[in-house]
Image (cartoon, rainbow, N blue to C red; front, side, top):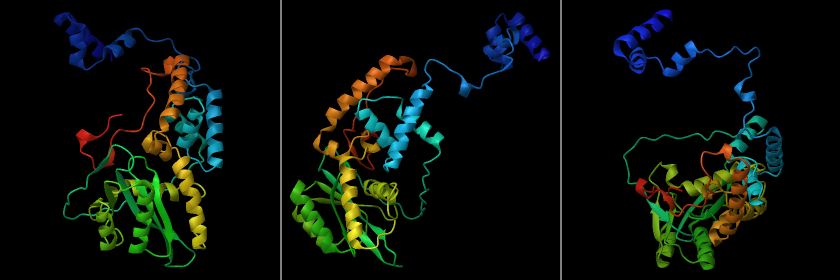
Length: 339
């Protein structure tokens, strides 16, 4: 170190610039400063995690956040749901990210890893579906509901509105059937009107001529996944994931009546109570009917009050998130919403 310091002094003398001398030797100005102006030694240094500073959220507020999270977990609700529910009530204790930090410290939420299947094959054209409002684009799929019997599963059919994420049609049956899918769409279109496009994977019920002919009569365009590309239908896949990984999911249904009863309660909860992370933590029904704007006002007032009390915790004045104006599947980058 002594030789390095002497080199800097010699270069400074010959060049007339300490900045250039430090640059040539690869030393920062901060390192040079503290070598010649050392800080006084601390007898009992305090770890950064234990230090107090103006922007730090108090332990009392962290404990309140923990109480909200634990109460939500007891009701089978996620951290995001508890955060948004408190926000809806005008309570702002910390950022959404900080709530997740508190949740991690509680060490009570374990999430299973979803295996990813890789496939190499000929590239196919990616389907592109977009929506700027409810009832423009629907996505649908069928998933298995396990039973106690080997090789036997009930079939849960579900139609999701891509823009609002609302479940607009569903049913649970003993089998996968083209006619049953048509019945579900007939009921959904009768209640809400026909969308512009329906997207699905390449299952037999989705590509059946029976369904194609019905939707064609309704003036609906059809869109399909690329083979072996599961994320071409993200809205349906995410909806089923939310259902199956929600706390309290039975995993096995003894009767079809039990499966239908569970889905009845789940769909009502999902549409009207679920704080959906993809739509700024509003419920699908709120985005579907536009009532999210009233809740947004409550949230924004709470957030601005929180900012006024603790401006040191922000770089700039925060903005309350809103649902995106444009959503879809495989949208070109230039059309991706920037909210």
